[in-house]
Length: 108
Image 1 (tube, one colour):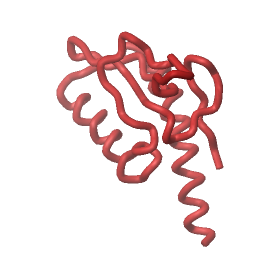
Image 2 (cartoon, one colour):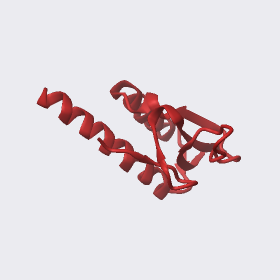
Image 3 (tube, helix red, strand yellow):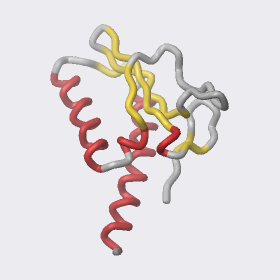
Image 4 (cartoon, helix red, strand yellow):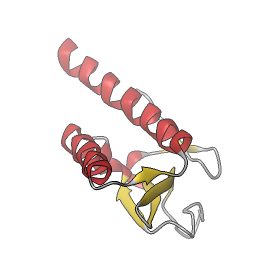
């Protein structure tokens, strides 16, 4: 099964230990990052992020689609991306995970 890589420390993240964070200001979205949640062992979450979702919810088809809907609604409201590459990197990891999960379901 696919795994997630922390944008801060570059180590593997288990879905229960991860978070997707980003900034939302002045009709702009940016700095999307998959990181470990801050804890005693890790301090990976970006301090400047003001929005987040728990990674484990995004690994579910419903959570993934809710996030896509969130993005589409923001774009409909006129929001722009300040760093499209950061969103592309996050979506690449999420898409791979969802794709592999669906393949496993179909094989069963």
